[in-house]
Length: 283
Image 1 (cartoon, one colour):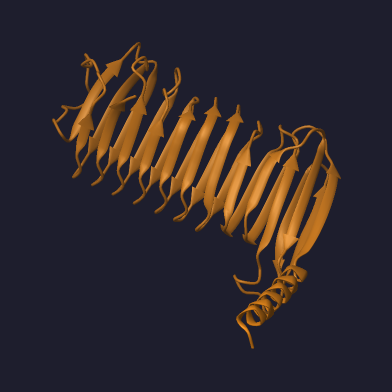
Image 2 (cartoon, rainbow, N blue to C red):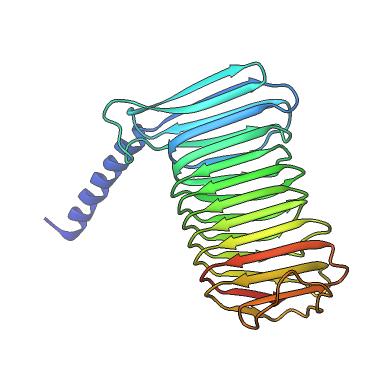
């Protein structure tokens, strides 16, 4: 058999294999009409979930099932909609993947959960809860909302969150925040790194805490902050120009803690670690 013949047979076999795999996929579309401030919940054991705003008062859900070992249960009770992945007999993490693409009214309250996969939510104004184990979380362009994010060891990225009540926690995942501001921003990770790049808003309270992970805050020269940073066994570094505070609640130890203010000290910033390094940097 010639080389070209063998290559042709391989190509045909690969095409048959791909056709067989794609034939196992099932796509299901759902459409619901809702009123203002609807509640939408997506509980997915395995697989990614993407949530974006719809153009009207409708909830549109497209679910792609990658095998017949899983089903999608859906229900509507009044203004509340729930989608839940239902695992059947013989289901495994490998054959139970479901991909959700969800469109909701921008003022809807959304809850998303998955064990693995990418969870992405963007351009909403309703309250948001995102939870997962090893998931990657990407939340962006949210305003005037409560944002709750929790993972075990999945990384979390928050971008352009305005006027938010933000509570984020992870056991081992890194947490990255860019342009996140609001009355309350509270972030904690046991061993993951925390990175904040923003101006800390005006009049907010910002608390960042890690046990062994490093914490880095990058802020512009015109930031208005009252900063307290302490590490028990780690190191505290500061490249940002702070003025001494007139009244301190404790005595700062160089290299271990710092206290200072910038601008009108409009926002409170408290950073704590046990053994991680803390660094304030001027953008």
